[in-house]
Image (cartoon, rainbow, N blue to C red; front, side, top):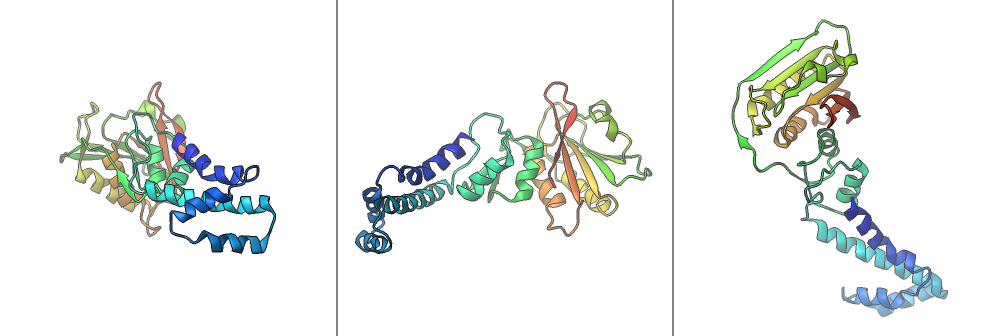
Length: 265
């Protein structure tokens, strides 16, 4: 987050400074680096106004635009959320980083699952980085369907991957809803692997039940590699198929119960 704030301040600072300090020479000096004829520009500005403060503000705008495109170009190949911190920032911070400041890459590692959905569904960054320490490994995929006869418009989708999800972790007001549990193997000790069959099964079930239910509640312990594939193949489909509303529940850090509902679509 500090990157976004500091760069935004850096970009708008010349415009703010121009109100109290003449920036003509600084602006013309920067433009001369681009081989722009500043004499003609100076004459053009002075033909509009002779007020030195207004001229300074115009030059402040020029400097801010100059700094903006300089930073945007420098950020093109950079990864936005670096470091070992948990990157649970508001989506608007990621949007400014990707769409305004031009960061070309974002990693899903150390990003909460609900925010991974938001980032991928919003198409904010051109390049998505996932965990490089995940091996491809096919496992048996099991599916359990419960309460499917209940007359509700919403469906629980429980995706069991790196850790097991038990019934007491699901909110009480969601327990009686129609529920599809898709389980990747039977080893839930935090081991991460990528199983194409797991992704395929999720795609089949979401495609089937999106025609019956308007909303899906996702409870998931999937790794970043699975999340990228699941979101792209099952939910990011140009509105051709899919649920009208998607809610991703985030497990809290105290008892790992899924108490935080986040609307991602």
